[in-house]
Length: 273
Image (cartoon, rainbow, N blue to C red):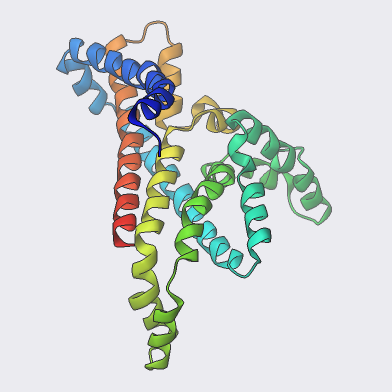
């Protein structure tokens, strides 16, 4: 058993990094925002640009996280049919996209679905309009597809243990007592999956809400989401520091909300087990 002194020594670098790169920057942002007065916050909330960016962020992150969680749940069920060694190998391979930065993901999708991408050229040979296919990636729907590339592995790593821990005995008992597949799914399977699915949704939403490099590389500065708007405000020399601080805090709050919900749901799932 690890002693308290050893545990403190091992956790010291993590605590120091968290304080230096998370607590201190957020505290400085909060200090700058509060010192700017309530006028900066009121003007930000009343801005049409901010409301459109907030709505675009919620729609994009919600769509990408919902699609990614759904596909990850189906993959988690499919993995249960594989042997343990094959399943472990698949999970290792599936986690590889987590090591890539957003710019690398964007470049990969440009090579596939860009205006001169390989899949776009193949679609042209099949008779499809390459202008339409090539422009899809630069739309919010195409951006959600690119987000799903690095969201699905995250959701899969959360959902696979949940699906693996499903009680087969309860399902068989319900079926033997005459319950149909739909009733079994609603009454037996879904209660066991609910906390894990909602946790994966919340975690993917937090990641998608704060991602900006993929969106900036694919859609450019014209996309109306909070990270791109924040980058544009920082790049403007005449931007008010208070407005930028409140905008950054709103993005931090949105991502932090998803993370807190995911942690609470994870704790709920562990307590039930």
